[in-house]
Image (cartoon, rainbow, N blue to C red; front, top):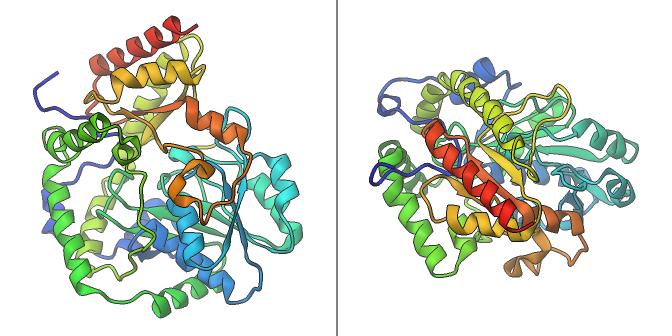
Length: 398
């Protein structure tokens, strides 16, 4: 491998310096025209979008519980707690990222404000079944599509939000998009945003500077310095949560996004469909290669659902083989990592907001899963080295 060549953990759309200077128009309008989103609104993050959604629902309800997967981003329960609501965990289906529908049916009550299934890693969740279980109780379904901009999502849920953070396909460094399936709810989301999201120019200036830095450093050489070295130092210090970026502040930044950052995002949006097609073709080819390795399973979309592929989620036979593979691959510059460190009940710092819950399938998923970057900078030769390491880890730990 070339010296100082680092593959990112996800396939983010490579930024173009020209995006910073040319007039890109309105990001929301571009997202509507290019990605087919219905009247989307732009927010400062996917987490902020979730806060706005929950605050909107609170206005017309006395319900207080939000059901979420027991394996998802820690920012999700943090956002729920920020809104003064209670987290309720649902286990995953065995060997899958979808909610355990049988358990979900027992959890939904008249005190449930929302159910929040996750399109994990760009894979399309079974929202139709969630909606069927939620409908008798008039529970809102919020689709967490933070990692799934461009996927075939948003058809069954009431509200859908996307992240524009670093590595999430299109990025404005931090940012989010959200939409809803009816006009009245969309107006409610917009009004809530206008009421609770302040203007914070110093913070937004910081984001603008970070976006400029991202534009210059999001490449294989720059990532060696701003991502690779930091990750390896955290691993050497035995701080895996920091290496993943799994430790979040409870203070959620809420501010308005500047017109300039939205124009930069609109410029990049024009290139996103082609990028999604390229990474999709690469992912399907590499899924076939991984499927040939005895004992492992690649998480794919079900039936005719069309997801996006920021990375490949690979389930190893057991935790021992997964850890053996990561021991060699995680410190390497090949873009192999873990998505989230734990199932949500196992984060110590979330103990005050996440209830102690028995979630065996979520814990098993967290313990056996690793991710492989689907970046176009990960060429076939480097991907082959990853496959060889996985084969070795499985064979040595039978």
